[in-house]
Length: 110
Image 1 (cartoon, helix red, strand yellow):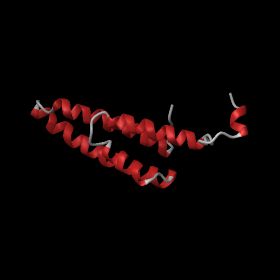
Image 2 (cartoon, helix red, strand yellow):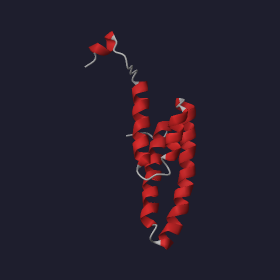
Image 3 (cartoon, rainbow, N blue to C red):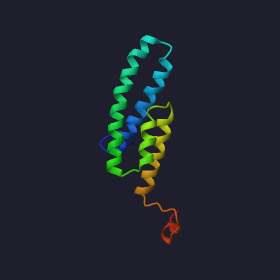
Image 4 (cartoon, helix red, strand yellow):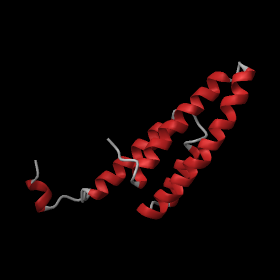
């Protein structure tokens, strides 16, 4: 479980919330009255999501293309779930000391 007290935890929570709300907005398009309520809520949540993205860039020093992917993820349905998973896997590998080249120490690990 991700803790909401860390930058990555806040980002993961907001990525799932914004992704779910974006799907709800697209489902509510045929229902005009529902869309007028859900649309602004998604807009406010997207701004909060952008704040968590900026915090992730500052704390974890992510690159420009990660920033672009994370911003666009709030525009396209289902993309926020994929991008969130890619970013958290990258940060987990970096935290675990993953190297792409084999070393003697990594050969000893199961």
